[in-house]
Length: 249
Image (cartoon, rainbow, N blue to C red):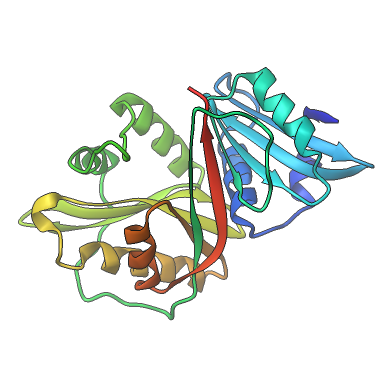
């Protein structure tokens, strides 16, 4: 049975799992008081079998071995999901227009202290930096939506950014895109084209991952390309899981 989520569905799990982190971080950021987010739990024999979150038309799944995958697939079709991300160990019998797969990597490196100057950049500057990196596989959302979301999450301790400047310009930055008391997910790693091949992204990724791991939390990143996976493995990460993302529109 899939029903609206209640706090105990999340609180009883206490997991550093990266897929659980995505759902819990969104829930702790927004709760249930907004139209563009929603949360559900699948209950099986009185136990939580799956968690489902929606941000606009994008869904995230935390699935367990107890999950009824056919019911989850039917639920996603009924909800008109535009996209859904989940652990590749599970198979959803649902037709998608497109799909990508990749790895979830966990930081296992040592405590790293960078020699470069690092500061907390303004999110507007981060957005302008991201625009310089936009491509067919990396789309930047509208500015107002981006700033509203990341500012809201930051105010609740669920998002943070660090960066480094060259010639007074934000040259490279990295963010946490999901955070809980158990784990954090790093994303939005970007360096301006003119400042690439200087190792700036690696310095920032290692610094931020080390800080979070030093707090006793797991640190993850999602990678959908061979090049990015190689970059993260060279930065102290190891493959921990795999993910699949379906696109329906």
